[in-house]
Image 1 (cartoon, rainbow, N blue to C red):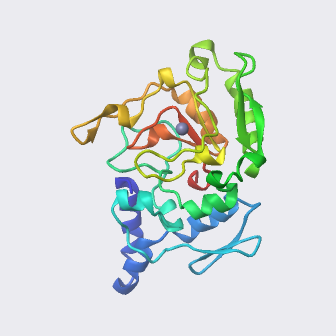
Image 2: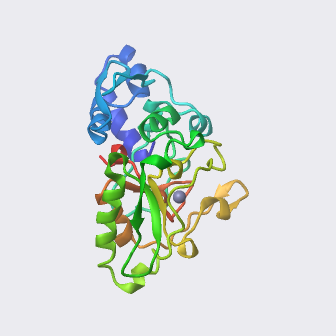
Length: 259
Ligand SMILES: [Zn+2]
């Protein structure tokens, strides 16, 4: 949680009787849960108490009553409530992210496996289709999931990126890839690349937290201009450059976080 959102949450809680504070402090607001449902209309139907109702009749516990756990613990076992816990701020970054503020890195594995399939079982690739990446600037074909219209959304992003000047396109070409059924190094869990709903841009002009780690502290570094980030954010993609564990080449489709 950022300093800003923590202050906002405390201001709202001050008016509540003490007994209700703990339960409400632990879970996402009704507004954020409604936004989650609205973000994935093909899959999600509603929220009832602490349960997420899927259109196919499936039900998933949200985990709203569970208190906040250390980030490294949540990273490996995020509930749906944890997934919404950190606020992703749209727009130009206001300095390096605070410690452990990595909105989007907390993902409930069951939630995304149900939506996009489990790549380890081979049921993701059948829903992917080829997308021409920056066709005016080079020839590269990427495999992107069709679920939630992610492939089409990325094509709209590409049409806008093609309008950028060449000095900005240099950050985009070549792409370091989309689909990759591989676990995240520090959590052992699937990334959004395993869902075919993430893209890495030019690795040669990017920065990554694991390359910068020294003495337990991560020195934030970014070279990606915000003109690029803003185009992705407007289309429902978040940027790994806003993570404490920064990954500035990385974008993934996470509309539930773009409030
Ligand atoms: Zn990536």
